[in-house]
Image (cartoon, rainbow, N blue to C red; front, top):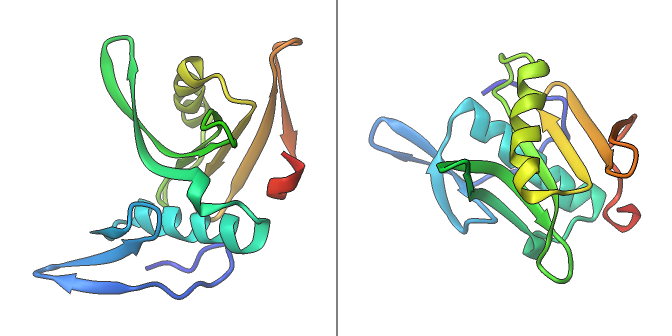
Length: 149
């Protein structure tokens, strides 16, 4: 897999038949290792190990109903009362982050109404804070520490 613009992390990777599987610490099981999953696992470890995000307040592949269609947020961070406060959307490293990517995460946010959004393809990372009073997005230069949220 491609080297990402994230700190190196040790992963548990196994082979099942023709496919490689990586251990997802949030789902507590092995999942198929795709380029997008490679980004997800790196980013989750980055948030936990370098930014202080509690693993117990994070979830991967969170289902939601959006206009009668079942969608899945790649990752969601929750507060102490189990309310969602951040949506994270991942793309494979070769997929550029475009306006369409932000529209996708914004559609999810119409349902969850969180104050923080992150998009990453493992090479580029964008984090914004949503100001609902002004109807604006404020892009940050870095991913905030958990205690700064």
